[in-house]
Picture 1 (cartoon, rainbow, N blue to C red):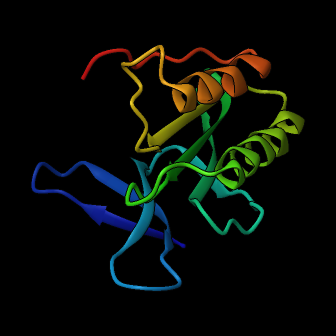
Picture 2 (cartoon, rainbow, N blue to C red; picture 1 turned 135 degrees about the vertical axis):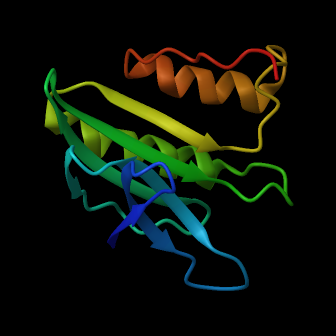
Length: 135
């Protein structure tokens, strides 16, 4: 769903969001400037991740943003990495820059952590670069 908001400074922003379907709480959202042309992109239904994805067109060309949230109450399972791989695989067909963001609830600053290494290996397999090293 896309909604438009005007801030006190008269900057017009829009929000593309996906509401949480179970439990309490919100879901995931991407906030962007309304002057950018935006379309939500279809994603696979995930059981372990919350995902929203948009294609934005700027003056420099199109790009894709995918926002992912993984609840951190449990240790990451194989399903999480499988769903992450499938989600990123779906974006390859768009042939434009892709930015993956969100809260993966991993120890991203710990290079020796098995889950972090698996996460980074998935990104690397798609020629993506992990930019978060210290919080």
